[in-house]
Length: 171
Ligand SMILES: NC(=O)c1ccc[n+]([C@@H]2O[C@H](COP(=O)([O-])OP(=O)(O)OC[C@H]3O[C@@H](n4cnc5c(N)ncnc54)[C@H](O)[C@@H]3O)[C@@H](O)[C@H]2O)c1
Image 1: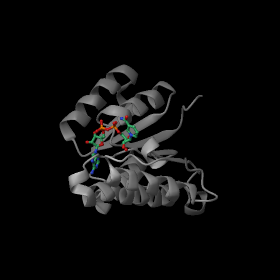
Image 2: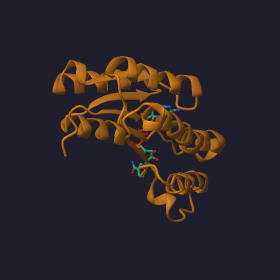
Image 3: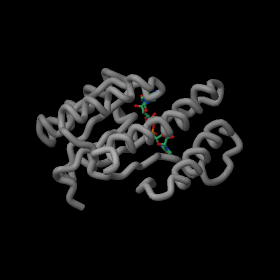
């Protein structure tokens, strides 16, 4: 897979899977915007990736995906810096059953918000080049997990929402 010339946005990229996705896409030649609410970790991760792949290959932007304004700003920043967006990975997510409203907001509503912004930015109808949206769910989005009902609800929601976006390359 050669992704040179392509630009990706990954949410929740400071650590964990988002960091791994960033590294993989960079290794295939893409440029990557890493967005996360954790500023220090995000900057450290991005600095390490820039050292490995080159200074202009990646940048970090602070973003709380539950803030519509901050999320929209990320798309603007990518356009200004790289002029395009091709791949969006809605990866940011939490497991926090006690704060289940916040969990739903991050894991499901922000994925829907990100998808809307991604479509507005990438679709040919809106002047983009087309692209791919990857919404990260879980096996907990496919079968019940009795100790994490709210997490399950959010991830089932991601699967149902993403599969219902007929005609758009979402996975
Ligand atoms: N790790 C697993 O085994 C696993 C399995 C299935 C699904 N997932 C899903 O993969 C995704 C990543 O999981 P992970 O294990 O890497 O988690 P993680 O906790 O290591 O990383 C999640 C990242 O999301 C960021 N984040 C949290 N709230 C945010 C917000 N409001 N705005 C922006 N960023 C925010 C965190 O700061 C963190 O950097 C999640 O959606 C998770 O549900 C993980």
